[in-house]
Image 1 (tube, helix red, strand yellow):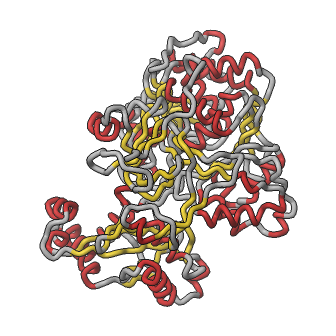
Image 2 (spheres, one colour):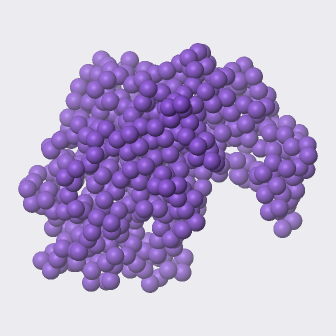
Image 3 (cartoon, helix red, strand yellow):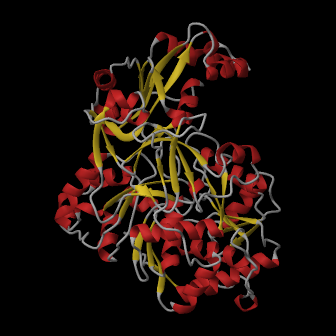
Length: 612
């Protein structure tokens, strides 16, 4: 039996010793060229920010001198910046100092994000915080409030930061940490992935050979700089090849999706990627009048990843924007994760993506077979790494065409989780193989990602994927926001009804006599529907659609206001978090229909919380 495994196409050869060496070489040879352009929100009279390679080098040397003076060499440094060029200077400043950059979202007054950043700060043990002058006073007050007043803050957008002339090159090796990439926590608490210089160089080389990047190439995007695709794909890869990176803020894109596409035309961007929801948002929000003014003829590589790639999105986007010069083969579905630095597999950007229609019932049983019921988009072949499909829990390799856990091995697989030996051993301890926690299947050398191992819903012996259930419901009514639902299962029975940690543990292992799995969908509703629509009819339409497509009871639908469904920084739905919020009664429904046993679960949890 042939095992489902992909071997590398070409080995990584001739790479520089560290990423710092790459940046220094680029700044020497491309000094007066623009390295970065940042486009502020329009409508306020702002002009684009430009940062040349020489300017980047000068600012980074000053920041590095300050970090060295304040004892941050070899230590984590937290980067809390709004979108803009100041972040790039701070990141390169950490490289120049031999410090370990820790990109993170700028804390706001949102409790969830504040708690996340405070957790990152404590977990990393950061010795300093870098930001901009507008935010440093607020950050100093925040650090004092979380009992960390001794952490120094520096505004990296000032001209007088440190002494660039006193800078000296750090003694950095390939195995030293370049930065910590904190995972977005779609199924667990965030953890700091340790990315070494060797990991980063290997993955940048793989990206370059996959996408055919070159010196002078223009890449562009709007993803956050603390997101792995935004950081490694859009910012650092441009430095790696000696290109130009054009950036805008995530908020600019979300408010006016057309600006992303306008940027591609205005700056002749060749490479720009995003999660699936971004392409879908452009489909829904770009008008015919705006489309007529677009020029997408320069765009030749559009990675689509970070969440399930929907075949209908690929088709609709190409059909909609081909009049603007978009080529049919521009889409390059890919698969990657922070634990592999970024890229694992990618479809050939010179050919149209692989779309496969398969037997849905067979897929539920773990077999990829030609048929009807579900359409999958391939994520391409392995890029200078090995990919294997195994039986979850045992690691036994599976043959082509069988669904299992995706394992990865290669030079881009990172060094583990910072300060977390148990999690490192669990995910990285399989003889060099990384256990991804993702489910997929290999067919003719191409990877098809089917879901997350922890999120699979098992009903009546069938494996159902939550994003399929969400898609079916969202297609039933235009008032349901696409990509803003969370499907999960809860278990009723004696164990599930028990309060406290013991009851939760019993539920997790499935004991308790009369246990039964119940499907729950938490789904956002568009504001217009909240004001004018019949929410009962909307919930019923979702139930009918799920029941018709999957032949399972859909007795539990919770409709919530926009913004209620939690997401990671890359836009992935945090289904585990939504399940927890549902069970502890923390959601505020606009309308809900629940089976009695499920309503009792929520009531018992609420009563237990009140009594404690």
